[in-house]
Length: 243
Image 1 (cartoon, rainbow, N blue to C red):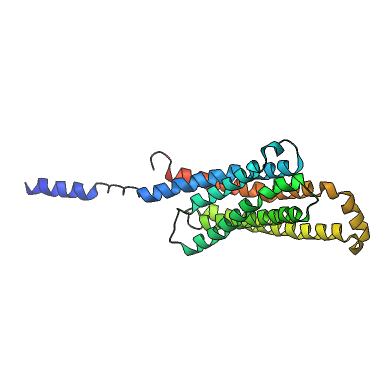
Image 2 (spheres, one colour):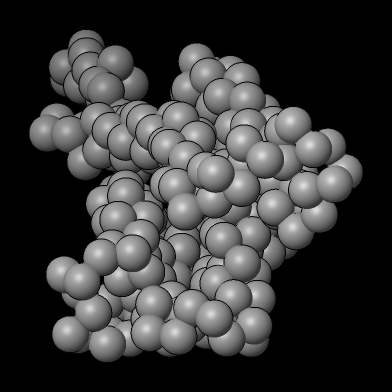
């Protein structure tokens, strides 16, 4: 009897411990996080295309202010989904709040894209569209900071290093584009500052916004790649079968 009891006790000790049940609240917050990443991944290029089309083309003008408001609201929705994840982390929430404010500014300025397309000679609309372009670039830089803070909380060292490297590049590109845009605008307004370059830029004046859209594509594409990678890591590590 004692031998049997000892064998049963040994078997009990050697038996694998049951895995802890997943935290339902954590799973819900991760689900919202993945949903927000998906919204940002698809919303960033759509927002760029829709705003440019509304400003420059006739295709979306019959819909008025609705398309730019919808796409900028889409980006704000994606960021708001992030807010359910790790609410106690102050550094993460602080970076997220900055991006949220910029998303709201973009949403508020987005109707002026349509107004400017109707009355491009109005100084107020010109200033508002310029403010939207600057705010949009700052939003892209702030989003990269949010992604870096997010990966700092994920258990993947390779992803953290990759995100840290590319977010630095993206932010440098964004601020470089901002400086280039300021220089472009000054030379258009005051071509006497540098007559040779100013004359060329005045000739390219109508195509100037499209050139800057082309420059934005590089940091935008790298940001989308990071978003997709982060989403895949979360799905593989948390929601894969057998985990």
